[in-house]
Length: 148
Image (cartoon, rainbow, N blue to C red; front, side, top):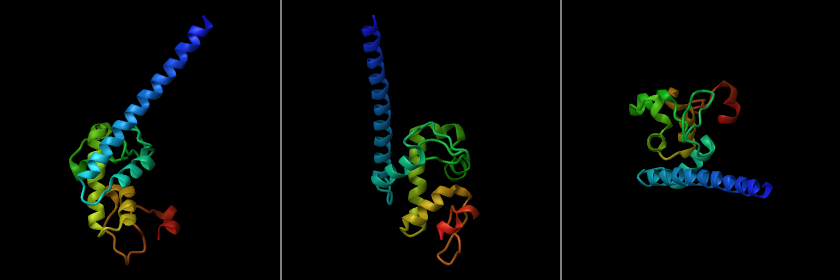
């Protein structure tokens, strides 16, 4: 009986891991496909942002309220793309607008990916920025020393 239970537990663990891998594969496929449609976001960049932001978790919710794979703030989703907060947990929507937002920012900052990523991190709450500005978009008072 112990052997049967052990075998069942092992099979269950493999099944759970396989489902998790399938979900990650689907998320990664969505990221790559969205990036391929983008003018400035490469698949590698989209994958890197998703890895750092949520570890590819479509149900991720930050302390600040950012949602989904690409960690979109509800305000950004609504103001920039007309997407309701509850739809930000849908990977297809979240990834599409995350890549579009990043694409828009890279264009805005003339291909400067570092500045675009900093603005992305700050969401739509970030105002305009120029090289002469003392503060990089997305950096607040607690990070000023490392963001200049």
